[in-house]
Length: 359
Image (cartoon, rainbow, N blue to C red):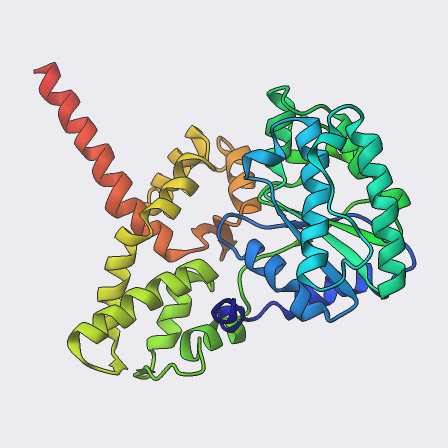
């Protein structure tokens, strides 16, 4: 965790926004921390307790774990148990018994409600509020869509938001509430406020490159850091990915000063080492028409904006494209290069194969 703290840079704006909504406000709404994949949502949640100070006792829930999607009974029991464990880890659990699984088998939601009464009473005694963070919250919707969970889970969360003054609920995910279709989240969380987590500010990105840890001793020739920022658009995962490949390369050369040529080597390595990130963005986050648009723009081909209006709008909303000087351009230059290196080669290979079969 100490290393995670050192690498957590440049998120003061989002911390201030959260503070304004849950600390300095008489009404504490549910919050949604929204950001695309690998933008730093989980790191933000894990660092919140340190950055928000001592007023809050954090409870972090990773909804990707199967136990949160198995059944209503499992959800209620594990929520109570996770709160207990977090309070125990913070040495705040005196007088609070650990929940027992068998007590949740018959009336799980009633048992959870009774347990939260005890938690709130304890929180008043110790002078702390509970910060309940649901990371990758979309997985709860998957549990509901598959009928493993019922919508009563969402009713319970809504009740916590509305009636538990000692508990603050924070969701985190790569989709806004209105993007999900199986459940109308807005109906359950009417007053929820969305906080968008985007690219790092240049100063924070520069700090992550030049001084990621206290003992970092790599130096850069003039212009190298600026190119670093330009090809990544200050995307934190890609900054760290290139930095990792660059350090490994320089270590193999037994050098401590990075040149522009060294950075180019690291970029080529990252196009391979981070291919999973690029492929997920390409295959999972983009529709077929969006991929067609991206390939055309990557190849500097002209497109008809009117024919692809919806795709262009969605790609800009996802921060994959941006509009500058009247033209649509890739936000992250590294993604454009990956498309040319990987997907264009794949398309050409498929076309070549088809021509062989036709002959």
